[in-house]
Amino acid sequence: MAKTLEFIFDFASPNAYLSYQVIPGILARTGAELKLLPCLLGGIFKSTGNQAPMTAFGGVKGKLAYEALETDRFVKKHALTRYRFNPHFPVNTLLIMRGAAAAELEDVLIPYVDAVLPAIWENGLKMDDPDVVASVLDKAGLGHLLPRTQEPEVKTRLIANTEAAVERGVFGIPTFFVGDDIFFGKERLGQVEEALAG
Image (cartoon, rainbow, N blue to C red; front, side):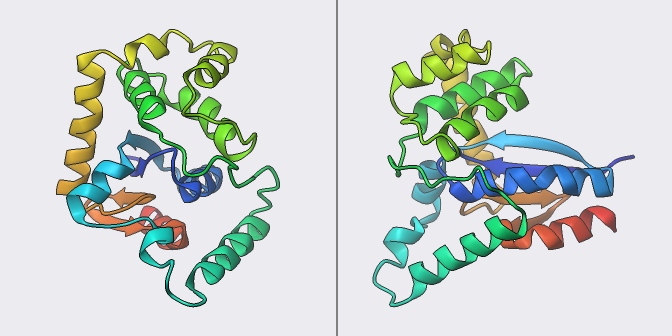
């Protein structure tokens, strides 16, 4: 039976985008299956007392510069030439994460993610603007999901996903699970692959 790589994600994280680009190779090499779990990063931070790196480490000399260096190394190593830091960062992802919850309910989460991630982290779009979101989803044939973002079932699903992730020990994004083993950050993808192959 194939192992499953669970990926806890929110579109707000550039590291979630970067990880998502590398994961297909890991799946191909290990024969694992991917399970995406959309969660609200803000909700995770609120529940755990965590903070965004720019807030947590903004006053630490050299820390953010080093984080940028590590990101640049990761981008070059994996030839992620389409990656662009979003000029509207930080983007409020509540609307598109509710869209992800709706897509999860309709079993079209992968096509949804494949449409939304590039819009933010390749094309630099302002994805907290409903008109921009509508345009992106319409082009992907997923425009019907936008009205669903206001449905109680969808809102409840996203909250439940987030609470369940925190209960499992998630404190930030990207977080990965292989069985009950937790891995945080794109820098742990090597360990994730080892766990899937083992």
